[in-house]
Image (tube, rainbow, N blue to C red; front, side, top):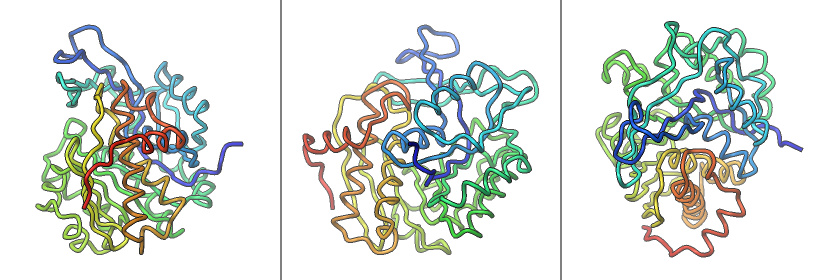
Length: 334
C-alpha cells in the first residue's frame, strides 16, 4: 500500500539530455536522455526511501509525459495534482558534462512557440487536489524555477498560501538556473525574497549562498531571515555546512567514484526530508549527534546517486543507504 504523501513537491519534471563527457549535447553523440527536474527528483527519491510524496506540476501530453506517468506509478509518487498540457511540450534541458562528471545547464529543445508545460501550471486546477493533499502533508518543497513564469508563479503562491494556513512548513531549494529566466539575476533575486522569508528550511549551493546573502555561514544566513530557518549549504565534492535545530555543523563529502553529479543535491535533500519526517523534532531542537546522523544519511543518498547516470535511476532505498553507511569510511565532521 502506497503511503499517504508527507512531502508535496511543487515544480518541474523534465528530461536532462546529458552530452558525452566533454561534448555538446546539442550536437555530439551519444546523448543520454534522463528523466529529471529537481522537484520530480526529490519526489521519486523520497518514495524510494519509503516516505510518501506527491508531485504538483504540469507535463505535456507527449512521450516524456508518458514516461513520467509510468515512472511515478512504479515509484508510488502521488500524481493527483499533476496536470497534463495538450498544447505545450514537456521540457528537455541540454546538460554538458565535463571529464569529471560535473555538469552545467545549457538551453532547451522541443519548444514549439507557446513555451513548455511546466511554465503553465493552472492555479484554479490545482486548488481541489491541493486541498486533499495538504491534509496529510508535513512539508511543502518548492524551488525557484516556477517563479520564472507568471502562471506557475501564481500556482506556487496558491500552494504556499494553503501550506501556511495548514501550518505545513516550507522547504526551499534555491536551485538557481539562469537559463530558465528572462529577467536579470538581480530581478530574479528580488522575486524570490518572499520564499526566503517564508521558508523553514533552505538549501543552497555555496555560490547561491553568496548570491542570496553574501555569506557562506548558515547560522548567519538563518539569523538574517524572519523565520530563522534551518540552512544547508552544499559545495559539491566539498564540505556540507548547516544550521539546523540550533546546531551548527560541517561534514566532508563521501569519496566515491563519480559517473554523473546530476540529481545528487536532490537526493541529499530527499534524504534529509525523509529523516525530518521520521524525527520532526530535529528541526527545532535536535541533539548534535542526531542532526549529524541525519546529515550523514542525506549525504550518503547524494553520494550513491553520483555513482550512476541521471538523477532518478540510481536513487537508493533506505536499506541501501544504511548498507553504504555501514561500509563507508567516516568523513570528517565538526
